[in-house]
Amino acid sequence: MYSEILEIKDIYNKYKNELSYIPFREVNNFKIDNSVKQLGRCCVNNEEITIGISRLLFKDDQELKNTILHEMIHTIVGCCNHGMLWKQYATIVTKATGHEITRTGCVSSIIKKEMVGKAKYIVTCDKCNRKIYRYKKSKLVTESYYYLCECGGSFTVEEN
Ligand SMILES: [Zn+2]
Ligand SMILES: [Zn+2]
Picture 1 (tube, rainbow, N blue to C red):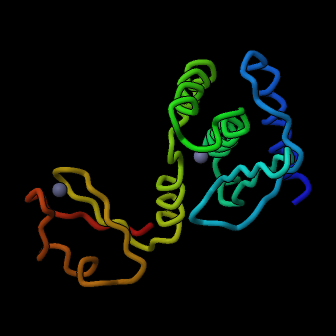
Picture 2: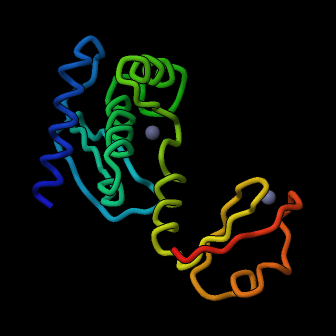
């Protein structure tokens, strides 16, 4: 827990120095939680600023940095929502760091990675390359030759 907080602080300090021309405000507290739905949050309360980061993000360095930058933009005066000003800064930060800062950011991709990790079987369409994750031996896994993808392709099953 302690080292995770330090990791967040390091990333925050690094970008605060590198992007010193952007008026990020000082963050007072960093927190880590186990949220799955909301991977990052930024609360401003009587001039106290807290950034919260989900533990899930520590599996992926890029996603962690993206989310910290995303939350840092919320600390700028007038950027508490994802309005015009927030978007302008997101564009500046994306250009300066190469990290693509989006409004919803990384939620879906992280959860997808979790799913892939837990799936026992991966069923892949030979034509469109769509992947379906299965956690048990379902009919799609055992009798995949009976099924066709929406695109008309047939499936290949792999154990994960
Ligand atoms: Zn946001
Ligand atoms: Zn397909």
